[in-house]
Length: 486
Image (cartoon, rainbow, N blue to C red; front, side, top):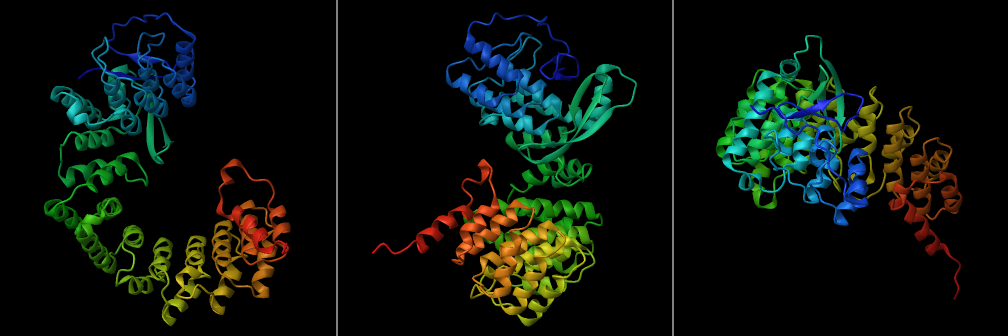
């Protein structure tokens, strides 16, 4: 196995590389221009805007740093996936063979960061890379995965002490992953995810059970290894893979069944128009599964897929009613969405169930109900008195999230009764700026003469609010209510 680079914690900072078996000897390159200087400084500072600007001005994407390695290796060693992506997009060669026999891509695999590998893998790696190089990448990822990140770091460093592990969030993918430090080296525990990703891109299709094994060892929500296994299995199609997947529904381990739900989420999300038959088959399978799944956590995951990707399935109202009083609050939250089909009249049983759930002890359930009481779920886009009264109560909820959803649902209606207008004006005294903006928006849509004052009460907004649709309502209000200049 090639000994590639992993991150070393030392006074030199995150740009420092430890390359075992390297012969570069710290070769210093003479920086030839101010543009090159700026590129090197920007990579070290993780300043992607400046990096992109330098490349656009003609800087060499394969510029070497003071250690004699390409700047792409600097980004890799610092787990700086965004800078690495900009460098590769700008032409940096991720397959460049270095003096120690490694490549930047091989070093990225070594770090254990699936996001980093994703950012620099590049286009058509199966066609671009020779078979021997592809196998080398797979072997390195599999070695780390089978040995384990702690044991591999211990082997490389000879350190006998305990490893330090911390859980980190990975942006922009929103995954989480363990980062392990030992003996001055740091790697992330994502080699199972990297192996899965490389196999997919290289045309290797392991059985479902093998991919699931890589996931269930990291069963935390949003773990990178779990995500990769579910994501790439969700891309696979055909009767054989479908048979392997559906067999997991009867697996005695609830973690395995929850993994199946994750796979189906990605499968349904990526189903295209030309696979309409797959959509119907998946919806029927999920509806059937939801009827008899005994584990609350798994059932919540099944209903989440069902609600997101199987809209207007014939069983959804019945499923919602079935689980409106389920002991698991996540299931109850999903049940509320099952009972809410857009522009469809609710039965008395559904309305009664939702109104009962509006006073649920769990804020998450009340928040779901506040969302589905939106008038877009009514055929005439109007609030009936019972629904309006429930929203007015939810608008005073102790939980901010509940109040926000209730405000959105109330403002989406055209209800202009005194209790509604009074409740909207009262929101302008809220500490939460988003609630104040929602109230101002609702008043403007109703042509309420207090709209101008309401927007003043919102206060200054940040640059991310510039294109918020609620701001445009004030302009339309002014247009509708300007004096007749006839």
